[in-house]
Image 1 (cartoon, rainbow, N blue to C red):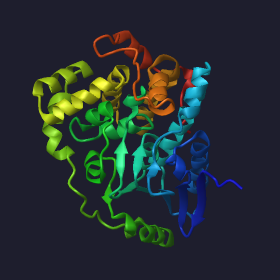
Image 2: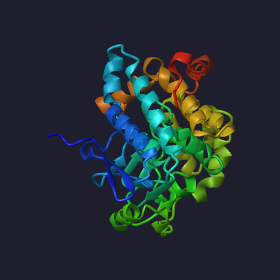
Image 3: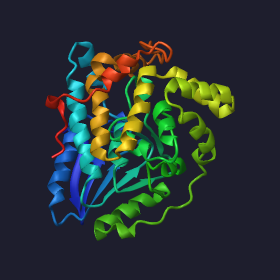
Image 4: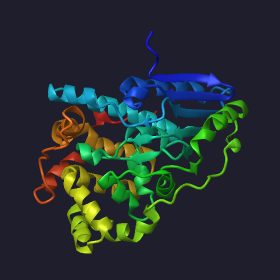
Length: 345
């Protein structure tokens, strides 16, 4: 008998969700997203459930992202709807977590990327440890930070959100807390005991205060990040980095030149759109403008081919920052047609 890819059960006073695809780095697929939403809906009015725990099997990843191989293959065959249908349902689940009326405690070890941020990053209590590596790396596959990621990025200090969104850079525990992706650092060998205390008590008051993590780098880099990433567009950001000439600036400029120009420019605009109205529903609705059209009209298929399917790490993007048409970016960020609106009810 095949084990479920998402284990949902009740233990003590906790509703407990466990990602259970460790060999696939707990990649989130459509079935898992639907099962998670179903469990959350069932526990919302269950008086026996006082809080929700979300964790993951295996040591390598909480959730390394969405399972997008199927979307790629369907898109190559001309089916441009399977991706948007998955993303629309996933986004509704992301909003469920953010707006949940009971505490949600996420334990995020290893890789926490893309779809993993959409689950753990919206929990009310977000715990990280020494192995945690968080990123929204979508510009490297021709997509944009979605699953409500633009909300976290928009609320990060200064221009750190623009930096992390455009570059897709990974951050550890301390930087995750600084940037607003996490709340508490606790050594991972303490996690099993904490989970049992949560389930037994049904009280998030048993959570410890944050321990001391290794120093991050974002706080020290904040002046450089703010100086460059306050520029009006990605071309201007790149020019500012090249003019700066610091090691950080050179490293960052190299990343920007490597990623999809279309995705980077759309990401910059989406982070700033969400900052103007920072709610989870607004963030997800804005992101869906791009992802609804991504399979057919963006660099997404080529990015997935290069990074995940063929793994040649040599995507042939449609545009550079110098050739990217303004009308292309604007078209991908047009409001979503009424028939595709996300039903958050």
